[in-house]
Length: 627
Image (cartoon, rainbow, N blue to C red):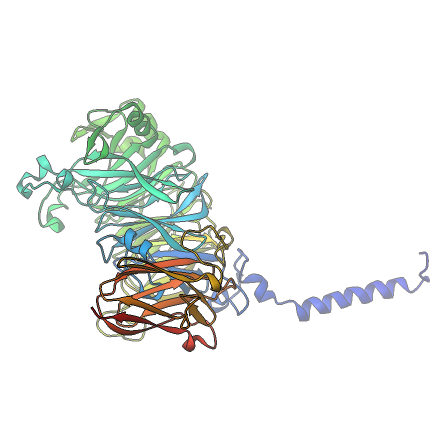
C-alpha cells in the first residue's frame, strides 16, 4: 500500500466503517424516509406514523373529491388527509371571488349552484397525466374543466342540449379523446311536454360525448347517442385491449315512471350498456346522425352494430374496467354478488351474435357467454377500485364495509368495516392502467358517533385505508362536507402547478406599472385599469387620490386589476363595501368585475386577501355622485 504504513490500513478502514454506521444510526431519520414521497409503507409502523407528514415534508398524493351539491371540488393531501384547497366549479365562492368576476359570471351563467358528483383526471395512454380535472353538474347538465396548473375552473359547457342529469360522468377515455356523459333521467328530447303516462313512447335516455381542446381550454359537444328510457348510472372506458369501447350501468329497465323505489326494482336483472365509441365516432363522421336541438344524435337502433346490452343483477350502480383492460366488474345494489365480465368473451359474443334477444331494438348478449366469475362480496355493493396487483375492492353500502377479492380467481381475501355506508372508494391511481396500490379512501355517506356533534346534520367522512399488504388496515378518518361522492387520487409529482402567473405585458386590460394605472370614461361607461401591490391600490396614477374612483350614479363600472406582486403566495383581493362585489387577484394575474353604480354615496373598498403587515391599510374609496 503506497503511502500507508502496513498495520495502519485495517484500523483506518474499521474506523471509517464505524463512523459511517454511527452517522447512519444517529443522523438519518428513518421515519422521514418511510413517510412522504415514499411509496412503500412501513410494515411495522403504526397508523399514526403512516399518516404523519411532518412540517417541511409534503404529501405523496393529491385526492380530488367531488363536493356534491356544494358544486365544488375538495382537495386533500394523502396520507395526511389534510384538506388543502376548495376549487369552486359550479357554485359561487366568495373566498376566491368566484362568481363575481367577469369570467366566472359568464361561465356560471344563470345558475347559482350545481351538483358535482364525479371527477376525472385527464389521461394519456391510460395514465393520469395531471393536466386537467373534469367534472359534471348532474342537476343543470353541465361539464367543467379545471386547469391543474392553477387549480382554477377554466371552462363550463352547458346546459348541454338533450341531457338530463349526467350522473355517471365524467369518465375519460385513455387518451382523453372524450368525456362521456350518460344521463340519469329519461325525458322527452328537448324538454318537450309529454305526460309521464307516455313514458315508454316519448321519453328517452341520452349519452353525450364531450371533447376538450387542451390548447384553447374549451369544451364542446361532439355528438350524442339516443338510448332507451332507462336510468343510466356509472360508466367507464375500456383500456388497452378494450380501448375504443365503453360500458355504463343502467336501471329502471322496467320503465317505471313513478315511485321508482318499488317500480324500478321489479326485474331480476337490469343491463350494462356496451358501446363501441370509436365505431360511433366513424359513423358520425360519415353522417349517420340527425341534428336534434343542435346536437348530432346517433341512433344505435337505426345504425346497429355499436351498442349492446349485457344482463346484470338488479339496480346496478358501479361498473369498472380493470387496469389491464381485460375485465369489467359490476353488481346490483340489491344483490350480494359482483360479476366479473370478460371483454374478450364479450367481443366474441358480439362477433358470433350470441344474443338472448333484444330490448328496445338493442341486442342482449347472453350473460353466461361473457361472465368470468361471480363473487359473493356482501350486501349493497356499489363501486370497485383496483390495486394493480390483481385485486379489486368493492364498497358495500349496507354492510358498511369494503371487500377485497382477486379478479382472476374471484376469491374473497379480506373485508374491512368503515363508518358508515360507503358510496364510492378511490384508490391511488385507481382508475388508471397502473394503480399504485398503497392507499384506498372510502367515501362514506354517514358518520354518526365518529366526530364531535355539530347538531342533527352530521359531517360525512373520508377514511384512509392501507392496502399495501394482504390485509387492509384502517389508518385515518377525516370529516368531510356533504357530499363526498367520488374522488380520484393522483401522484403528487404529476401535478405541475405554477406559483405565479407569468408577466404578460400584452395581456388585455393588464397594467404593469403604477404610473400606467388610469381610468377611461366613455359616456356612462367607466373602465378602471388599476394595479394591486403591497400594500395599496392605484386606480388613477395622475390623480392626487390615486386609490379613489369617482363615478356618477347609474354608470356602468368595470374594474380591471392586475396584481403586480410577482412573489409567491402574495394574493390580493378587492371588495367594495355594500356593493356585493369581490374578487381575488393572484400574483401576476389580471381579474375584473363589472357592475352598475346604482347606489350613490361613499363606499370603502379594500383588499380582501391578507397580503402583508399593512394589509389593513390597503384600502380606497368608490365615490358615487348622486344624479
